[in-house]
Image 1 (cartoon, rainbow, N blue to C red):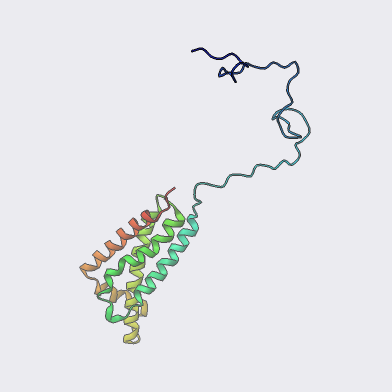
Image 2: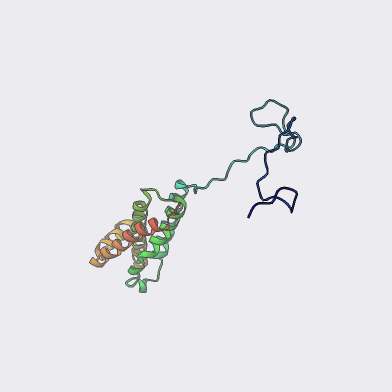
Length: 187
């Protein structure tokens, strides 16, 4: 089989040859276009390129630490304000202040190296504050103290320490550390 010659039985299947012009064809560009780097009048309707939005999250460490301190105070206040009859079974809720502290640290602070240890310390601080508030309520309910309210509160707290409290502090420390690390935004 041979290929048909152009114009005999239909169009040829051979590729077209290059067309030669004696004059360059008109450019296929919009009106007023000036090639980059070429001198000329500014292009009509030029819109400047807008900056690309930030793809990495912005970490607000100072805000995260201040909100974590506020969460520590609120968690300690809530922990210490529980009814006195439920105080013995309340120790296992040491993970709740740790979660309250870890959420703003991780979400707003990001993956900073110092934030998980800070979360652990603030969670343990919330637990300590809660226990002190609980003992303050007990001392205040007993009546006026001869040695001062704060002194009697710390004395009552020391006298009430049990070995199980060490487990509660360990729960708060480990929970604060791990929850802060896990709640950090991944980027």
